[in-house]
Length: 592
Image 1 (cartoon, rainbow, N blue to C red):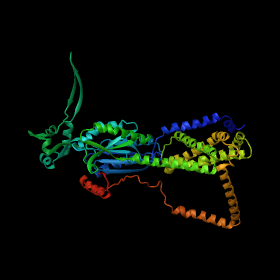
Image 2: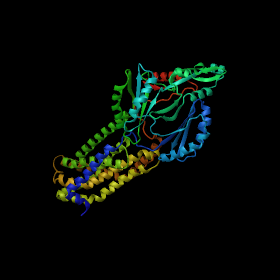
Image 3: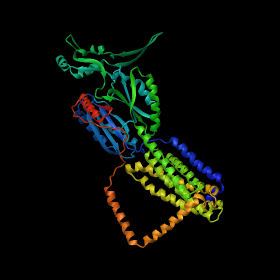
Image 4: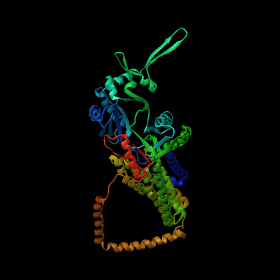
């Protein structure tokens, strides 16, 4: 007795085996994360070093170049990019595909530590961050603006209230503030006054450092009272900063207000964000790489009405960009295509088999095979993305083959006079080898796509193995559930009556015409060989002249553009050019 006999004789066992596959797949659907494309381990380590007051040439010579020299000796680097701007050095280290990010980060940290003492003392400590190269933009951008509040107050509210609440949402990696105006005391120096009093910028810096100091002195204890001691010279208001003594010589006291205009302003005036023509502050929401971006952004959207209800009067929020909207639309289109594919396949099977009882067997096998493939996806650590969904769509036509072959073989035995139960046993025994061979062959066809290296292999690995997994599950279903259903549903004589009989007669007529056409074609074998050779030879130029790209370009309903102005242009000049481009293109969001 072969193992297929067990499932025909024990229908409960066959049902339980397939229910396990079905339940495991349904449970795995809830655990899979959703992405636009498969996750690829392409990391970028960014080293940022601030050198306040230094121009781009100074930053490049004393910060960027020494760091680049030592970082280049680390392992796993594909290539490096660097930029030196006013007061900031940025080095982007692109790692090789699938290289251990932790190992590279450790090496780069040790390399940077080697030259830390060689950098200018005024330079801040380098900040090293790890980023994912495939996500250049945040998943969601929020816009905040107010009529009665300035940008400093809006930024302060976002930092104190909104940013912590958004960052605390499960799955959110970070919430960046763009166009921020963080409160800072600004001292706008007057060179003529400073020259008259013989004061240099470094003297002002030292005076500010001495008079903005906090020390922990401990505490004093008496017999009845204990007092904590604090010595601080910190200044809090603009007037206090104006009265700060920066020089005292010969009875002459020079205060900060004498050589500078002191005002409560912002740390940075080099960024400007506009939304629908008005000034705004943006917040970029980044999702963790292993999180379901659709669920995370859905939770963020659910939190936005709560945040809006607590915002100050006159302050409002908007959503200029949501990357998950395109992903949801794309996945919805794929699911619609999958539904249409299932209906077409079921309709074609019914037209060819001509019996509802016969159609029911492959119809049941299709969803079990597809859902079972989802369990294999979860076991392999895959995600639900456009390529895995494409594999599911393509596998519909493959997973149904094994079940149809089993149904046809059972009907052949029944048509020969064998009882349905015995016919199912005999048919399953005959098809054990062929179905296993078909399954292995189809899986082996797609496996090489999944094991190739490079970025192409990283993208199509999930596609290939998902397709192969669906085929493997379909083979299991065809050997366990299909013969059992055939023994219970198929009846003798149904292929000669009704629609099934009419379809059988039409196929007999088509078979006769095909035999006649094939006989005539074999009489002219040289012509067949010539046509075959021409078709084979034409594939070479067709392949060479075809356009090649990693993925087709798609309209996602958003435009990201970069405007480059002259190196000495100010923010006001850049804003003018950005407004002109926005007006010409009809854009409603831009930042300078």
